[in-house]
Length: 162
Image 1 (tube, helix red, strand yellow):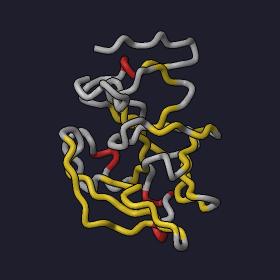
Image 2 (cartoon, one colour; image 1 turned 45 degrees about the horizontal axis):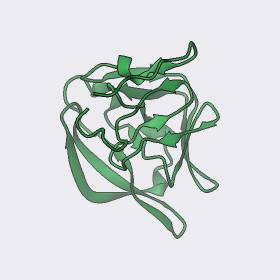
Image 3 (cartoon, rainbow, N blue to C red; image 1 turned 60 degrees about the horizontal axis):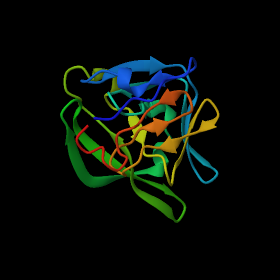
Image 4 (cartoon, rainbow, N blue to C red; image 1 turned 90 degrees about the vertical axis):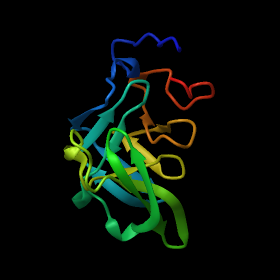
């Protein structure tokens, strides 16, 4: 098992997050960009907090520029949130496959994020209150790492069994 990093006074430890995850409102300004295009921007987002993971942020559909999303024929299943569907993010000739996702009808406990969108940082730029995020490692998870978090974070090599 990993050893949690000590959290500074202005940080929260991802090891204090629960399992199953907690879903809570965040008043922070959340943004997603592809190049100069703003794909989504909100101060009405939700964050999903799960042990060892950085927060996964969800945007209300009204705060997402849906014209940049193209639904994929791709689904997955989360034991905590249910069936997930995926979208490519497309701006002009630039497409980022599977970079957005949503839970249209989450399982009980996940109702707050029904129909909201979340985004993988990386090729897309995630921004929380003006800070560009670091994407959660590993390519499978979609958490956004900011300087107010203490890890280590699931997704790094050797974290499969956490």
